[in-house]
Image 1 (cartoon, rainbow, N blue to C red):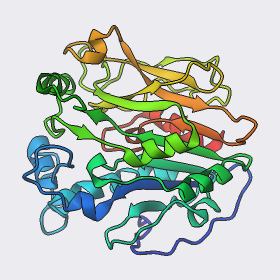
Image 2 (image 1 turned 135 degrees about the vertical axis):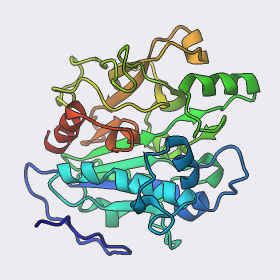
Image 3 (image 1 turned 90 degrees about the vertical axis):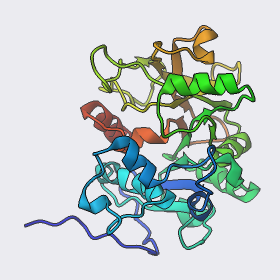
Length: 333
């Protein structure tokens, strides 16, 4: 009988040696775990759901012993742990163990992005799931460390600022956005990503994460996505070879490009929007949103910068052969 590898907590990571043809991935969650987990659950906006709320909405999916109060945290902390568990499948694709770092962890230990993380990493994935109200922000030292990292040949930075739902002070617009994505677990205002936004500003990444848009699905299905609109002429690395869709998620950010320089950044894939319910972005004439972007190397940077939402790398929202092909492309190309 074979057993899965044992999990260990509060570990000191052992550096991974470089092996040609294999990429060393590291995941960095930008949140303060205590600040997120300790949010007042009577607050309606700008917090994660408790796990009890998740169980209620998704009943009976989590009504098993491993998610009971005997085995699993039932507050906001339980929901945060779901994110950690959801990247296990992606971790197995890379061929290396994948360190799972947090900006501030359960024990209140703060870990900024520095050489301790970067020296044994080829692809750093920054998952921007910090609520703005928790005031996380990239320091000048972190920005300089990442700039130095990206001067190394073969490096890649994946930036994943999450959605920005309900930024408007107009309550009617917030309700319209809520009706559009249709997820009862997302409040009328849920703004993410101060850390990732400050990091992008420091690195000169001309992108803003906007809205939370519901992707279009194939008629008659609940979560089979309409294929991506791919721009393969710009995909010089082949990241999207054999990839038709990512995975379904009810509220994905539009990565708005804020520069007119066509050489600085390329939109490699756009996702058609579910047009069944109105949204300000749709009313502005849009039928797709920017889903996957690439900033190619330049004279100051040898590494690549990609933008893709963190939910693409989790199994919380399903996955198929096309998604795994995307993961393998990132790990091998």
